[in-house]
Image (tube, rainbow, N blue to C red; front, side, top):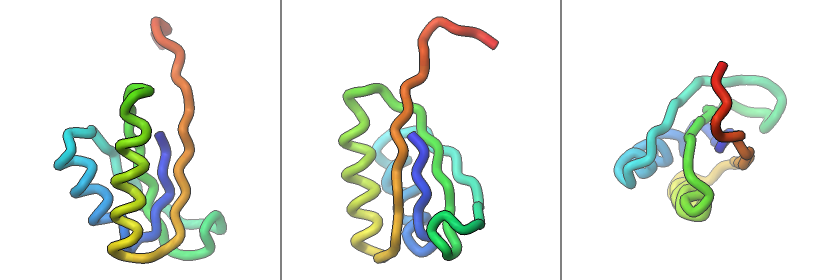
Amino acid sequence: MIAVVDRRAAGAALERLRAAGYGVTRLASSGGFLRRGNTTLFAGVEDDQVDGVLEILRAAGAAAPGASVAFVTCVAEGRRL
């Protein structure tokens, strides 16, 4: 999953995701996507974990209101670079 999170909610989102056992990578990002300061979070999760991650992101956004968006992508198994 890739989540572009308002910078004010990023810390809470990261802490909550890690506390729930998800591995997350945080990147500072900027640009016109949300037209304000934001943070991009990357998390590799199984299909059955997607709803849990989205719930955590929603809760973090409610604690520090701001625009956020999450992208869920499928990664093919068994391929090596």
